[in-house]
Image (tube, rainbow, N blue to C red; front, side, top):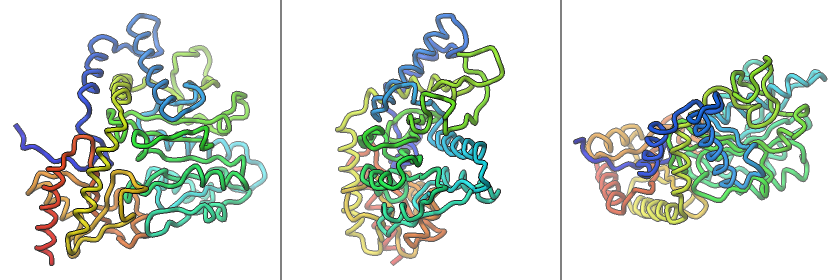
Length: 401
């Protein structure tokens, strides 16, 4: 048997998964593993039902108006790509005045957003403005509005930073932006918040919401979704502002070479990860408020313990108020990757060290290209495990003093 591990990297992927997740996936593979949407036999119908159940669970989770507006994807990065490429391709195809589409994004974004947009800017296809954040990781609404103009087709903002855990006041920010730009598409990256916090896409007036299945929802990797609002994709599909980047079989319209025009099939193609979504359904059904409360209690224990260790610098908000269960820190004189490697090799503790795919945020908070050590407790984390982690950090801080 391998040595036990203290897993504190749940912001990357939650682990361990609830037992029901694996059980649901095995049950699917054993009894229902047909090809969803392709074939009229019983196994195909039952596989299709799993996808519709997953769509329904995700719809209720974020208070979407109907399941058809929940596009199933292969993860949050896939959903972000589907949204960004779709919006920009749609605008570029229809723009005829010689101007370029403009996108507003922020310094807190993940590379899944920044690299996708960067490929358009370096090709000269769009203009982009990156709005800075403050040292706590907040992006202010007035700065976002100032960055927008009449050519802005998309504004993208993370609900919470994957580095600092800082939660943006999304509802208030969008309300302020809508006063001046009522028709602009707004995308909110919910990779770090879905499953942890209440999200209401209708009340908050969000147009595009990418979701990760394998983080706060505690589902399998390779699962995710993209909510698409009526503003982004009206029921009158001729006025869609999201171009279908994927082409292929859908099972719903076999004749002809054109993709279907109705959601969700208009933005989905190919065989979905049905076994993964079977697991995601079980994970969502197992979600409780107590799970999140426990994660925040463990995060509070991390914060308070690190604050007491000389030579440790904590970044972002000073307490658990306004943050996800994520803490970023550094030990003076120690490279974060060195800290990560020592914790793993000598103590069996899994954390993340580096820039966490968010280089602009590290520039903003002064951690540069080295980044920091990220610790993110999960549902299975115990107080004893946190204390072991703190003891290890205390010893390292003494060594580097």
